Amino acid sequence: KYFFTTAIVAMAVVSSYSWAGFPYDNLCLDESMSEATEYIGTWTVESRANVRVTNVEVTNTTGVYRYCHQDFFRLEGVVAFPALSEFQPNGDEWMTKDQELVVDIYGFTSLLVIAFVLV
Image (cartoon, rainbow, N blue to C red; front, top):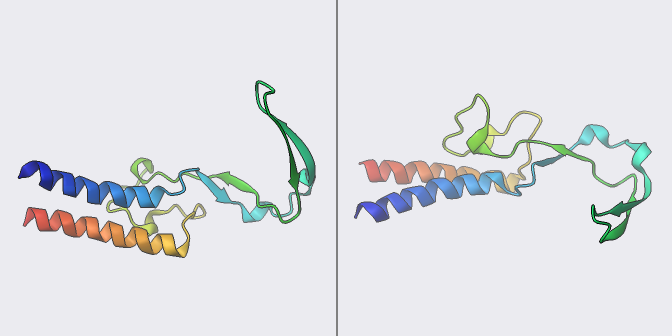
């Protein structure tokens, strides 16, 4: 009885955080770098062992990305529970509107599951 109840609560909470962290690459589109003209051109990219060589073309429409922290479990100075889209750091928003909706639904659902189990 207790195992399955705990498993359902854990699934509800962890799945809400899983949806919040998607796409798990810690990259955000950097709108301020849209005019990074020094990178425009064709570049040769080699792997460390020179096993694979690839040519990459960068144009003026190629997006520029920067690091942004996408892990709600490890946000500094914030207890992000339940996982809600509003906990995205200002300026580091990575979720689409659809993802924000799904994350909010999962976050509130995890609260309801916890409340249902406790009552």
